[in-house]
Image 1 (cartoon, rainbow, N blue to C red):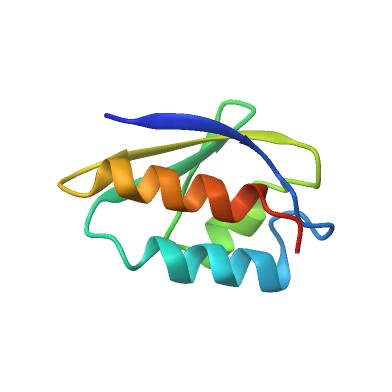
Image 2 (cartoon, rainbow, N blue to C red):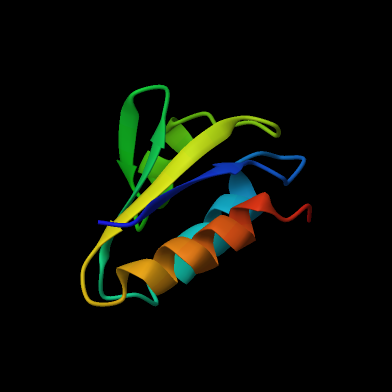
Length: 85
């Protein structure tokens, strides 16, 4: 089960537009994907759950995936979340 840590890059954190882009990207993958912050897990394909984590710019999160395209999902989502937008 691949997982990777990332630092939130967007100024808004994982709220509004960045969260919507993140969820849209997560839905491209067949794997189950979760975002973990401070011991709390959220389904990466659920906008409300992702925003409920309250991840702000500079916060560290872990992205974990399980499934046939898990490695690709983790890499893609880590790159997306780390980019300043």
